Amino acid sequence: MELNYQQMLFEFLGGLGIFLYGIKFMGDGLQKSAGERLRDILDRFTTNPLMGVLAGIFVTVLLQTSSGTTVITVGLVSAGFMTLRQAIGVIMGANIGTTVTAFIIGIDIGEYALPIIAVGSIMLFFFKSKKVHNFGQIVFGFGALFYGLELMSGGMKPLRGLEAFHNLTVEMSSNPILGVVIGTLFTVIVQSSSATIGILQSLHAESLININGALPILFINDSAC
Image (cartoon, rainbow, N blue to C red):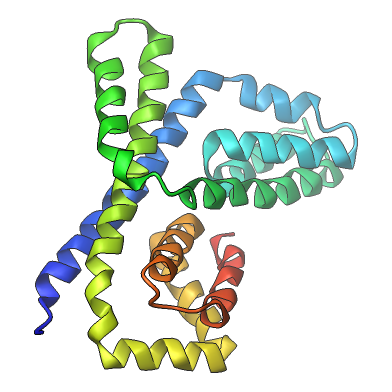
């Protein structure tokens, strides 16, 4: 069977775009719901290293980006509201909080993505309450995230019959450094470790990569810093 490379590329890139937009839109909705309380949380609950780590996790889950938490933390340190010692705990927590996104995208609810988007759209366009509007943004982004994953998964499915791709995954299994390099480069390009992990999970779901080839790519969290 001849592969339709154009369709594969369009589905993959379109799915990636929707996935990244879903994460961003959901994060914006969470941030609007929390408002200025994010800075207050980091300012007040960093009296000891453990509380700093917990605060970093909580804020990163709300923002859906460890980079955003790091930027806020640097701003507080520069303004003198937080010491460098406190900031270290927050940044550690931010990196832990990033794994929550990876857990979310690992849930297999892709078939319900469109109904979730529909519910989010109704809340966005048919309710005037700001709280409902913000929650609708979260729901819409959540659905878009999974719809993007479904598109990426569908676009990559034909790769099963591509010998060059099979050889690449075999090489990554035997050469972990190659997997780390590929994962790092892709994460630097898209500026999202969650996107790389989402693609990795889609590849594994389609049996296009084994656990030995996938594990080195999981180290890409470092390249998102």
